[in-house]
Image (cartoon, rainbow, N blue to C red; front, side, top):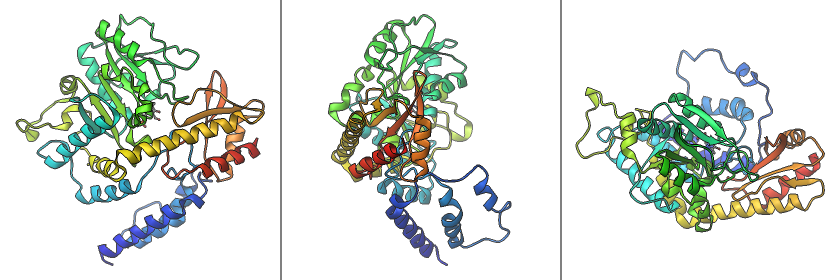
Length: 427
Ligand SMILES: Cc1ncc(COP(=O)(O)O)c(C=O)c1O
């Protein structure tokens, strides 16, 4: 079989998968060990045709997958492996360039810097900041903390008690103490805590629990006065800033030292792609620029490896470029607005139903809700077991809530209404 035939087979497979995805059970119905038990314990001695892999993909792997690209996947923060993203991933693998330095990939480096400037414009971020791509927000925040540490080593990192746990991991990894700050009754980080011993503050726009927006502007003013670095974790909600009417949630971000936004969460880009901007590239450079003999810098060029933890870097800019060009600013705004509308609709359905309540404000596309009497973990489990949808639970003030996070480009109003019917019937 020729590569060309296999390419066609893979294309057919992807096309059929995406076309029938909405009919598959969203979450896998398997127990730990089920998939491994079906896989050979050792690799084949002789090479096998690609077709054999596709067959096993259908028979062994797909039945054990939870389908993140499904229009009724609403767990954690749902996302989209969009068509331009899928196509670009194929090109990225074929090119297989490593964007560690300018010399290792001149066009890769310059495309990445350009696409980050494009995205900064789309999100309304300040012009002239350095932007580059990390694999995840977890890594981007490690980079931001390492940069903050260059100014004040040995201090404390403060973040909301509702902040994502990756913030604590980042502080720990760079050897900084981590302390949480209480939230107000809308789950926003309070801004009146002492900063004397602080190295950095991490504010979140769109917390993982309830998508609350911390008071970034107030924190920025205090950090500026105290000489403390402010990093903004907008991993989920930063994508909303493509819509001017949602930019209230970016207030003060232009006064921060760095910000991370995950296109792999709510900007229709397949895993993984996390975008990081900073007004202080020199601090990142100081933290990360180790230049071995074999990687001598090119004069007047930027080597992106000098701004983050990784040396080898995938050509992720290509897929972000593909996504931004395919949808255009208009297309991105339309999708984000539709998701916000669908979240509003879902919240209204919940509020209108006796025995159910929405438990937190829903400024973006995620609704946190609960049944006031039934066991919400059980409802989520039963709803997911139907195969119709996938929702996850979390806790708020000690009580279980269900989160419905909308983020897939193919999710329709019909998906939302159908999911609500299933949830109600499971209660
Ligand atoms: C607010 C927030 N920040 C950071 C992260 C971590 O993102 P990543 O998985 O890209 O490391 C998450 C993950 O859901 C998140 O919700």
